[in-house]
Image (cartoon, rainbow, N blue to C red; front, top):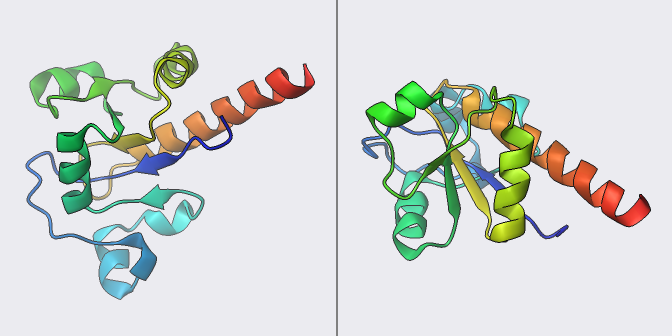
Length: 136
């Protein structure tokens, strides 16, 4: 389970943004994604990669917004796990136990922090789980 990859993606639900790769974080992507610099531990994929991944079923796609935003508009294949949900850790661990595909989070836009927070919380939950599994 240490091979679980948490992937974050913040983009408009219309999927109309140009592709931006984290591997080449230049001043342009810093302007487009102002909060990435605060989350260097996360992996990022472009909108184009996300579209391909969703179509191929490569990732577990998670909408990190509250339920109202999800009900209004979401990616068809996405589940809804808000990081503020009291049962977030339980839901994410159940997903990981059920299907060990990488997880791609998205939220409401370029400056939205919900995906970042959900990603960090997922990493912490999986590390805690692995620690209790190996050392508990």
